[in-house]
Image 1 (spheres, rainbow, N blue to C red):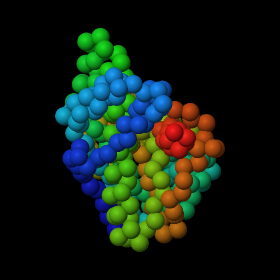
Image 2 (image 1 turned 60 degrees about the vertical axis):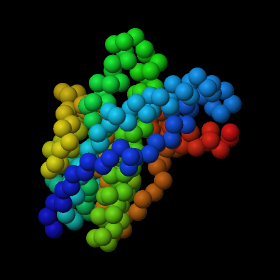
Image 3 (image 1 turned 135 degrees about the vertical axis):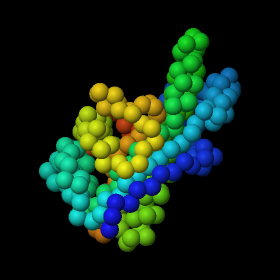
Length: 239
């Protein structure tokens, strides 16, 4: 089996976000949200759609090219110090999907423009909207990877990204070297992605690997989007 690489440019209409998450991040609930704020949010959401141009790529490596143990993951003979949380979740993999995606540079220019015009509130809301769309695109791409895995009778893990669960973002340079296609994402010297609203990572594949719930209770990253989603679910259940 050769490396399987694919590139997608889904329409923004194929992505969905929950604006209630943005409301929650801004400190609002159904009990205290104002009509004025909701109108601003809805306008920025609809304006954002014009500047989002999704692109996503993945490369699936053949069986026998991936392994995990004792806080490290080996991908095609390149070692990554992911930490024990990630390596523990991937210990049953024997191949891997490496992915990267972005909602595009035009969104960055649009959202940064609010700072230049002296509207930090709109800039912050736009930033949150962009994060939601980036994660929606990551969900969309994970579904494509899962479909490909299932066609080959393989299970798949959750997705894991540098910068989370103890995996240093500095290892993105090595990760990107394993991608055969690209979406124009560039890495800075400190391995941050440009455009900003981009996501990269890995998904473990194998006959015995299964997707489990994210173990937020054993991770100390407070800003993790999965932890925020879990908190949002609790808020939604309480309102």
